[in-house]
Image 1 (cartoon, rainbow, N blue to C red):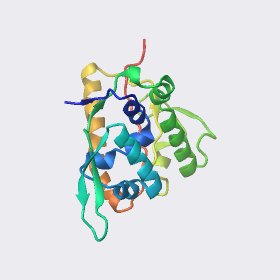
Image 2: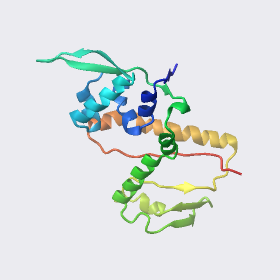
Image 3: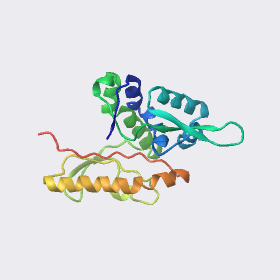
Image 4: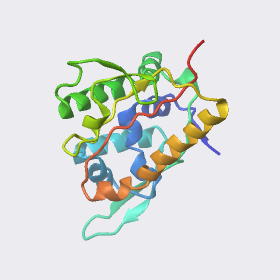
Length: 206
């Protein structure tokens, strides 16, 4: 059963991607302020600030301490791992930005520019091997070259499928994502690179 959010501050924090992601270490089990700082590359001051807000909003609870020499370390846990927020509790400006994925789009654009400096210099509109019209910047053979960054930015508005085929595609996309997402905690601990992923599939408007 998902946790229904009724606190306006909790709603604002959960609708803010930077604050919501600060809950992640505490969703996995008891964690400290330092654990949050290490997991997300924050200073202790930044981590303390986030934890303080999350506690005040009722999203984190103190659950004990971790013993060490000197003063024990306080531990916190998220009150749930699934939150449902009534739309009326989310400020309109936050809702618009979230629904438009503005912050993610901006980070995506920065990532493309950083790893593919020529991105955006040329718009490629082409017929692919399946006979579908695609919009992109690089030929697939160039994208898959060993020296090119592991990067894909593909839009297609001409994919025709039956509903059953579209549902199968949906399941395969999500299964593929979860297959690699399961590797993420171990790779993060190893210090591997962080990647942005966007997946989308929807019936085109008539």
